Amino acid sequence: MSAAIAQPPLRIATRKSQLALWQAEHVAALLRRTHPDIAVELLPMSTKGDRIQDRSLAAIGGKGLFIKELESALEERRADMAVHSMKDVPADLPGGLSIAAVLLRVDPRDALISAGALELDALPNHARLGTSSLRRQAQLLAVRPDLRIEALRGNVDTRLRRLDAGELDAIVLACAGLMRLGLESRITARLDPKVSLPSVGQGVIGVECRTDDERTRGILRALDDAATRSAIDAERAFARRLGGSCQSPIAAYARVERDRLTLEGLVAEPDGTRLLRDAISGSAANAQGLGERLAERVLKAGAAELLQRLRTA
Image (cartoon, rainbow, N blue to C red; front, side, top):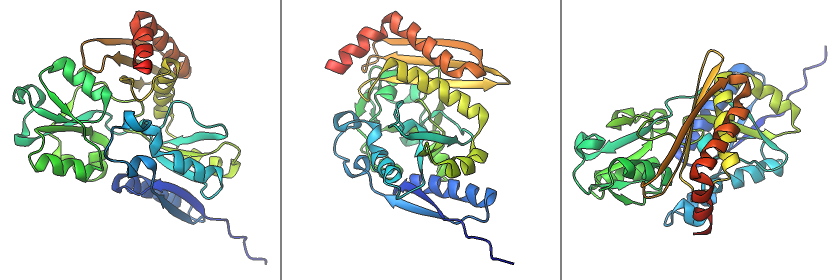
């Protein structure tokens, strides 16, 4: 009897940050469980978004800078898949690449972490709040226009250290990242989406691969969560139709119950003086169409002019 032919290992491109490595290891563990006959290897990489820490994401080109090197590894066939936080993935992917799997979403909300365990409405007047997200900045200033927003870059530990050193009164991070790193106890308050609507894809791990790689796509199919996929499709369609950039405070959050999807979307002035917000519901099977329709409504309500002004500012 001839020996079975060994299958080539699956190579996962990932950023080197603690959270990114946790996410890649999580995907690797799921793959080893579903395909125990295939070896899985990690290919840790440093991205431009990781290397440049002294400027805002808006100034250096946006969240997409966290994934470009990983996508190059896919295109050059040095890796078979790349693991991302879906909130870092631009609405338009390079030709030949696709998101083959999205894992079950965990808590998508924003987390307030404050000195003295004070909730948002209890922070002192003119409190120093750290965030580099224009989306968070706009929504929090809409509720608390007195806040002093300060730029906050770096990994989770770096951001927490600035708070603990007394440089800031509060910071805002994603609940999902803190939970994955075992830091859930640091959360002072989970911000209601009515206060801070999450980023597109927040709380979701996505796995990208080459569209023509049938082997990898087939292997990843077992990891794809149907309800999360519908939610992500709606949110990303909303962002894609708006054509926003990292200078555009855009938020979207979809929930799926049975076969019905409800999508909330928002476009805001960075200073929080104007929030354009709307919602739509319909069949989850029409997730992308719902996202596009909601975007059209928000554009007609004034977002088109707002976004154009932000692009040319």
